[in-house]
Structure formats: C-alpha cells, structure tokens
Image (cartoon, rainbow, N blue to C red):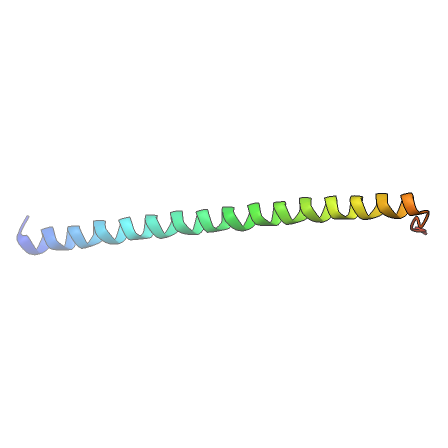
Amino acid sequence: MDNHEIRLEGALLSARNETMLAWLGWQEACDRVFSARARYDRALRDMRAAQDALEIFRGEGRHVA
C-alpha cells in the first residue's frame, strides 16, 4: 500500500465518520421534535380538561352534538 492509497483510505474513513455523526445528529433532532410534540399534546389535553372542568363548574358545559 503506497502513501496515496493510505491517504485515500483515510479520506474514506473520515467521510464515513462524518456521515455517521450527521446521521446521529439527525436522529437526535428527530427525537427532540417528537418529544416536544408529545409535550405539546399533553399540555393541550390538560388545558382542555381544565377548561372543560371550569365550564362545568360555572354551569356552562359545552353542548356536543
């Protein structure tokens, strides 16, 4: 194996490493998005439940068809 081939192998390994790191970063970003959406959905559900409870307490219950 000559120096040129060694440099090419090194470049290939470096590119593969960068690809794996980018993939990992993308996966972590997706996880943060899905976690944030789950928190939003829980907060929205809790807000609606609190709003419904307040309306019932006030005698303003929603009329659902």
